[in-house]
Amino acid sequence: MRILLVDPDYRNGFPPLGLMKLSTYHKIRGDFVRFVRGRDRMAAEETWDRVYVSATFTFSWKVILETIDFYRDCVQHPGEIVAGGVMATLLGDELEEHTGARAIRGLLDKPGMLDSGDRTCIDALIPDYQMLEDIEHEYALNDSYIAYATRGCPNDCPFCAVSAIEPEFVHYLPLKRHLDTIDKVFGPKQHLVLLDNNVLASDQFERIVGDIIDSGFGREARLNGRVRHVDFNQGLDIRLLTEDKMALLSDIPISPFRLAFDMISLEELYISRVVLASDYGVRNISTYVLYNFEDTPQDFYKRIRTSVELADRLDIQVNSFPMKYIPLNATDRSYVGKHWNRRLLRGVQCILLATRGVVSAKRDFFEAAFGATADEFIEICLMPDDYIIHRRRYETNGANEWRSDYRALSRDEKGTFLRLVGAGKIKDINLGPALPRRVRDLLAHYTSVARSGTR
Image (tube, rainbow, N blue to C red; front, side, top):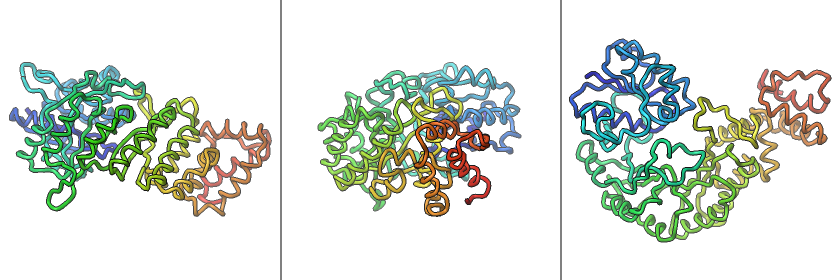
């Protein structure tokens, strides 16, 4: 068979692990395999027996459908285009209806799921790292083992798709055997990235840590004179991080130590687990912070400030990585949570653009970007984009005047302003005399900056 593997051209630093395993599967069968990224005209001019398209993000719906449509004429029937991944699992019916392609829902973890009679479990295969050399695009983890030690998660959180994609929690996968096979075929990798969704839930956790150490990732591990790292990329569950498990984790070179702080009700637990990790020598913590779900903007600010205060108190790095909630079936990123509005979400995006997506653990940098209080944070988020992103440029040329105008609003005027600016379509607002003068003056900041880039 002639097999084409396609990773759509959306922003994704991770190599397409599913396509890499499919490449191994078809090469074992003796098929011709080619890997491309995005819409490759030369590949589309050829004839293929099967085209696989990685359908990872539901909010990349438009790009994925355009990619499938682009390769439609290079197969004899649309059903010979196969899409797999998160989007294909959650929106499989819609994808098939719109494209005629075949959606693979969940994992390819049973024999014969692609080819009747074949006894291969595709999900258990090692990924084909060599295929990444076929394209010019360079993924972030080319020199890392990418693997799982478990599958699934027992929590079934309402904001998470894991229970749909990996419904059964598998407590142990033979990690060392998997890594040893990669070594034999492709040579050793510098780092280990584990994509487990809740490794601490495993009743085989001690065995998993043993596999990691036996695979060359003990506490002081080095390869080619360079330090090796282990990254539990999806984060460790603070509800399951006991002292016994922390003691086991301290025997492997985890960097960064990833946690999640998804809701303000977990604040005391989160603080205690950061302190526990620090007590065991962890110096670099990275915390995923969910927002736009059921939290308020004030909750979000409090959670990221908590990490800054912990970093200061413990003299360690505790960086936050805000993660915007989007419903599992959303086909774009436009969702607005019940306590948020479009302007506040855009403001967070602008702050993160200025900080390159990371919330600094340094208090002075944090307060400069996010404000010294929750009220100041909301005030910053409400500003015009350029005032946020290019803070220094506009500090005395618009931003200070905006603050003065905003703080001068009466309660009723502020309500009117928040209703208008929160809708996110400021350019469409009629700034005529029907609006209170102070509201009109404040909204003028947005239109003048948009027109000229200066005020």
